[in-house]
Image (cartoon, rainbow, N blue to C red; front, side, top):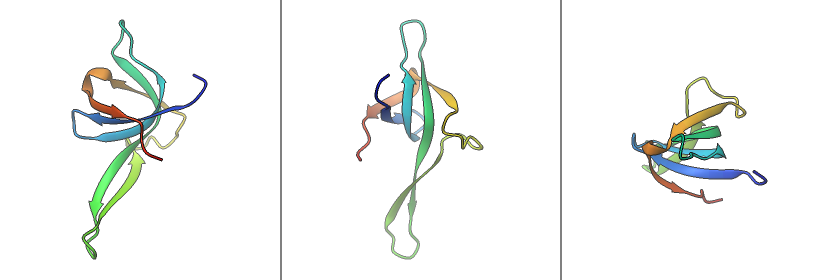
Length: 84
């Protein structure tokens, strides 16, 4: 992979994950290998009522962005390129 493939996935659980795709699924495996997975978290400000979006590690206690994770491709509902 010459250029980082950053993707935004919507999972069947409702979670939205932004990550770097290291290896896509294949005919032999439905696993997608990812790195630097961050969960998109939505909150509402108590003072202003405005929606606030932030990121946190997708898996608890996995803060090292070089760690690899897998996502089952069958659990992905939507996929897009995140906006800058």
